[in-house]
Amino acid sequence: RTPRLSRCHLLYHQAVFAAKKGAQLEKEIKELNLQQEMQECTFQPQLIASTPRRASSLSSPHVRNFEAAVMRMKQAQKQHQRRLKEQNRIPAGEKYEKLRRLGPQPFSCAFRRRSKPKPLVYVDVKVGSGRTGRVGVHEGDDFRVLARNFAKTFQLDRDAARRLE
Image 1 (tube, one colour):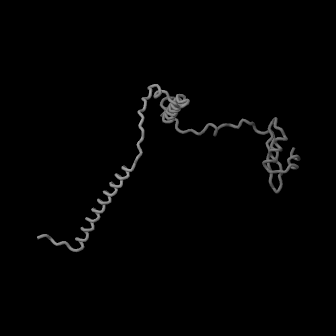
Image 2: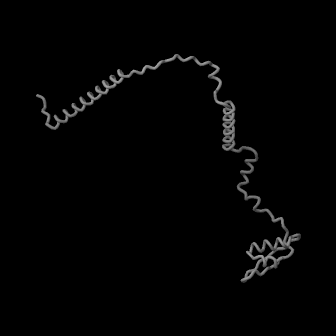
Image 3: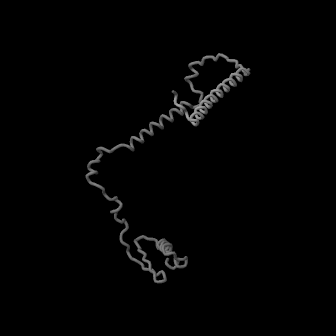
């Protein structure tokens, strides 16, 4: 006795079978159409036997300045490798251990002394509205330059700068 299939299962299997058969028929139709197109094709190319290339034409480039360009690229690659090597270099020797033992040090410019000696005299100038400015006069200073710089610093007008001179 064979088990009975429900109506739903029977319809499903029939649909699957029909889909497979339809796909196979479609494939056969495409093949027949392709064969028919190939029979209608009249194009027949004339093939010419190519002459073998000479070995000299393969070795010499047809590009102008080819050798110079290759040399430039090789030199650039060498320079790039050299730079990478310098960047990745870990210092050894060269007083490295001595400097390492000293530890971090502040920059030398932080302790640099002023080269200018103390001023000969300080001149206090009343600028106005309760403000005063101080000018230090050193030996050999030009008074006009001092007055001009003071006027610029305190944003004074030309008349006030002339009176300072």
